[in-house]
Length: 455
Image (tube, rainbow, N blue to C red; front, side, top):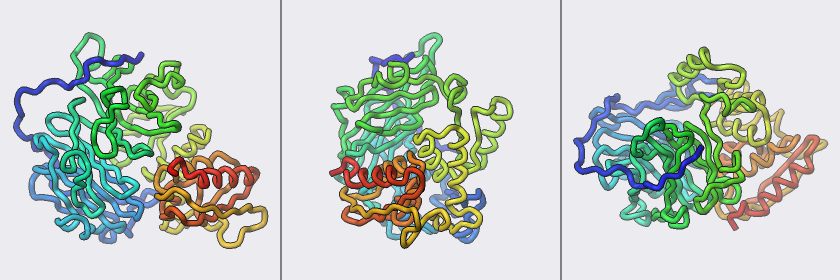
């Protein structure tokens, strides 16, 4: 059951509490794993680990990272007293060209008490969008590619929301540049229901509330009277918005109304991973992102797992992308698991180059081999193969019984396509072989020629 909430404002605050100092180590520690799960010794100081001192105060840690198209790594978090956005080169060195602080840019949200920077997204124009919370609710900031504050965003580069309470936990960009973020809203306590509802808000590209989204730019809703928290947001075909959370999924139309063609006719799929009705038919593949998370998942599965919940031994980002493409292409749970773990082999695993390219035996390069169909097509959208078009191509290629490449890389891999750095006006060499080579080639070419809806 889903309940829309009429009360949208977060609980009132009559006074500002003292600044909290989270108990955490004062160094940011980052490690990069190879495809096989071992430390990537080409990252950092030769041991796969980068340790960068952000401050001598307690409470410094990173909450989220994002990958730029050029392979540089953006991290956001808290320094103890301030927030920060930092950028590292692909090999783990601080990018000294970023900001005036030699790779680390400290900043504050407008109401800087008890503030946290929780999520970061790199836009197609390489501007850096950060979302989090201050004492009064959700807050966002945007930075130019050089680390300076983007004064065209919100007020002085920052935007706040009067909706929702703290714990902003999801951030996403729509194709047209509008911004989605969400978390949870504290609600009046009632018997037999949770204390939090889902909360999602949409802003215009310049950081102002989007009044075309449920009239006042924000929606709050409850699934099964649980303690709800948004954990993911995504735009899908037709500009619809999928909201994922700990208690279920919901899909909304572009105007913020529930999409009644989704789920059981009410726009909702209830239940979480812990609820066997949620995954009894298809199953769940779990990809932990840290060693401690792997141990936690294993412990839980020992007591509550089964054939419907499988733990993938795969790199988190590459494995998640490969698994999502496989699932979207109709693969079952074993196929999704194989795709995730296969990504580890493609991205730095034993016997493969550490560049992330698919092995030469699997990808035809140079002159097409016998049975291979080929076409050359020009990218029409100005931004080229950024994340969303790359995902469209990967999803299309994965939907056919064929091996498809673009400029010599696996077309079913979003990350490999993005690494091409292909921009508008550039020619792409598309090749396909296999039982459905013709259909796959034509479908990929049609997507590219169509401009991915961006022209």
